[in-house]
Each structure stands twice: as C-alpha cells, then as structure tokens.
Image (cartoon, rainbow, N blue to C red; front, side, top):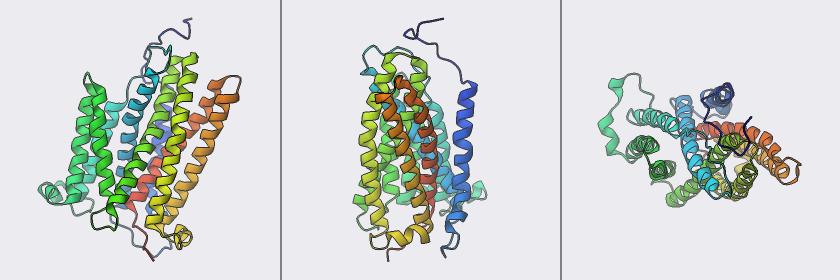
Length: 328
C-alpha cells in the first residue's frame, strides 16, 4: 500500500465519475426542458418560441464555462499550498470546451433563424449573424469556445483564460441590449455575477477532484481552507450583484408580487431558495473543516453543494429563456 503523500496515478473515468455525471446532467437537463411550461402556468404570459431548447443550451453553455474556469482557479490555489502532492486530476477543460462550442453553435443557429428553433439547415441565415449585435455576440461565443478548447490541448492551457473571459463578456453584453436603460451597468453586474459564479461552482468541483487524488495529505485540508476563504468573498459578490440585478428587473415596490405572478419571478425565487440551500451546505462544510476531528469530512457536504450548484446552473439557463417581467 502506498503512502498517502506519494503521487497517485491518474485513474481513468471510474464508475463513481459516471454516476456523478448522470446525477448532475440527468435531472438538471429536465429543469430547462420542462421548466418553461411550469413557470408560465397561469401567469398570462406567452411562452417564447423554443424556450425549452434555448434554456437547455444556455445551461449547457454556463456549465461548460464553469468547468475550465474552476480548473484554472483551483490549480492556482494548489500551487500556493506548501507540500502539495504533484498528483492532479486530468482536466475536463477540453470536453467542457466541446460542449460549450456545441451549445454556442446551437444558440447561434437560433439567432440566425430570427430567434426561432430552426427546422432545417436551409432556414439558418449564417451570413445574417454579422449584421446584428446579438448575432456578432453569438459568433464570438462560438469562436471563443473553439479557441478555449485548442488552448486547453496546448502546452500552455492557462491561455484559455482569455477566450473564456471573452465568453463571459459576450454573455454580459447579450443579457443587456443597448436599448435597455442602464445597459452598461446591467452588463457590469452580470459580468461580476457570472465570473464569481463560475469560480465558485467550477472551483469547488475541481477542488474535490484534486482532494481525491491527494488522498489524506494535509495539503488537502489547506487547499479546501483556501478555497473556502475565497468562496466566502465570491458568495458575497454573487449575492450583491444578484440582488441589484433583480431590483433593476423588478422594482422594489413590485418585487414581492412579481416573484409569484410572473414566470421570471417564480424561477428567480426558486433560484434564490436553491442558493440559500447551497449556502447552508457551504457553511456546514466550513464548520466541519474548522472543528471536526477529521477536517476532510467537510467533503461530504461539499459534494452535496456541487450537486445543488448544478441545479442552480440549470435554473440560471431557464431564467435567461423566459420573458422579462414588466416594470410596473
């Protein structure tokens, strides 16, 4: 039996990894696909064309963004841990970039068809993408994920940071059209919100994968502690930008009513409750990390936190596909 401090060989995808992926992807995929009809029920709002498909593609894009951003983040943290074992999990960034490229390509085809799900390739006006702001942003995301995948496979995978940043900027601009009042402020809030969410979600996933490779090494406790301290700041930023953005969509004097009477408000309320559950799990993990006889027992609530964050990502994809609430 090898010592826990010795390098651990890189295993191939095991049964546990397959189960984890199924648990994350299976139920989470149902939220954007089935969510629009449930959220719009008895609201009097019309369902946007292809809302379920758009929500699923947007959720896949968000997930594909979180994975490589989290890997870059945690690898940087790991380098600052004294005595960290050299073992590291195999990166999922190339696979995430592929998924992101496919999702971005699907969204671009919808934009090229006048924001309708195309029934055939002949309906897609690829040339028209460069003629609109939304089309240019869609093309930027497609090319950025392609570049991120190539960077991830290169000898300098850290360079994928730049195309990933381009995706985040494009998403922030897409969410707030130039005709929207205070579009620049809204884009800035979304930029911070999405960046922090990707670091938090993808960072926790990769931190747990790294701990699995490090075994019982004390460096694992140090890494988890470093991540927990940064995550607290990320959570504060996510909360602040999320509340501010919500109040811009739904004024404070109508927000309580719109949370239950509009599709956007209902999904937003569900997302808030999910984030509250994630915060409770994160607090539970932090308490175990600081007070338990074995600090690595904090991994148990942290794994549950990853699953909950996967559902939050799915809900975020659904939120982007629903009609915005009316400013009364």
